[in-house]
Length: 512
Ligand SMILES: [Zn+2]
Image 1: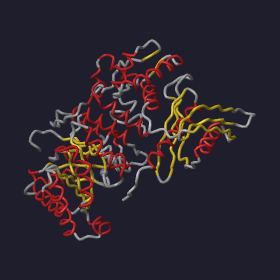
Image 2 (image 1 turned 60 degrees about the vertical axis):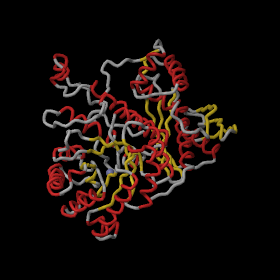
Image 3 (image 1 turned 135 degrees about the vertical axis):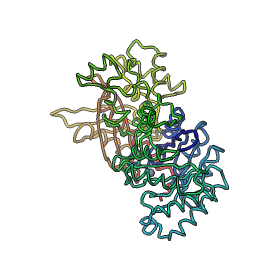
Image 4 (image 1 turned 180 degrees about the horizontal axis):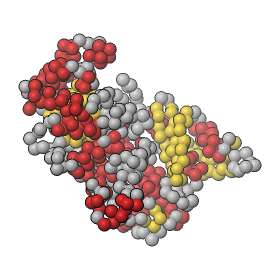
């Protein structure tokens, strides 16, 4: 157990989370998430893998320059080139910059992937940690696939890494294979058998392949781990990572038997979850613990009766504790700018003045068409009006005719790189005609992976939100668009995806 019983929360939404299929974010989006993580007061933000691409490098650098509270970590393999590149981005955070270097230590990874002997792996790790320690005292070392590593070798690696200068040593369950009892024993074994273990914090990083990431992380904390690596909404490779909101609320709610503290401002959890869903288009299942739409809905009659008499009969934590306001204010036609800005702030949006003005104009025009404006509508307005990539392609105007008789025809005018272009195209339906027209005007042939339409809130007057996932030059991008006309919102979503694809293709890629 570490001295003050405070468990450090290391958020890797922007690194491990971003590696999950379809979760790529651009720099602006990463910065928004990072500033929400700052509000949550996480101890460490893992901002990316700087050597992976120029885009990753820039994101880590911008976050290191901009974010003031939390430490900023950058991932790098146990190689001099990786570490140098990582520090080039991290140095802007000064002492808060953390180099996170790793190498695989399980027999299967060492033999098949690295093709190195254990002694060579140990030497490479020591060399990497020493090199990193020349830049900063803030060095984390990870034994990739630690759970499947021979325990005596794992202990040897941990001892050597600490001797070389690592102040945090991570024991990840890279493949999501362990169970709480086993993981507890691994951490306890290291605590009991590594002679210099008190000189470093033991960290845990669990994947959710068996649905045990949070349970395993808690078991490790009880065995003496002092840092948990986790992500918002539990996003991450494959089945995802340990979910930040679940582990934090478990510690808080069962403080009676788990007397550990953490520094998280839990009332920002809900906004963080929504922001990530809006940016990535990866929605949270309704029954997801803590942040799912039904997590605080007590619908069964007998529950409602109990709840009316005393909330504590069924409620183990309050919705307010995660920033979900039970008596939330629904905005409408008569809501003024003050109420509008207050609600945006509660939802986690800190917008500059001119953006507030743009969003407010859009809000007023929507309120004229629709009686009640819900939080989801506000998310859509902000996503649609404000959070935009550079608009190389802009929608000027469009008209689509369709029905059971006429051939669906889309007439669309776009501004492409500053030039106005117009075309009329026939398609298999109004959406097909629209997409074909945009492709023709932009001369791009992205592959459509997925197209979905949803109404953001109930009622026929609701905003229709469309999501388009495209593949272009090897990148998957997600576009979103909202409008009270579904066909217009599908055009906006398609154009948004195209602009993101163009933004991505300008970045140099160094895939590893
Ligand atoms: Zn991972």
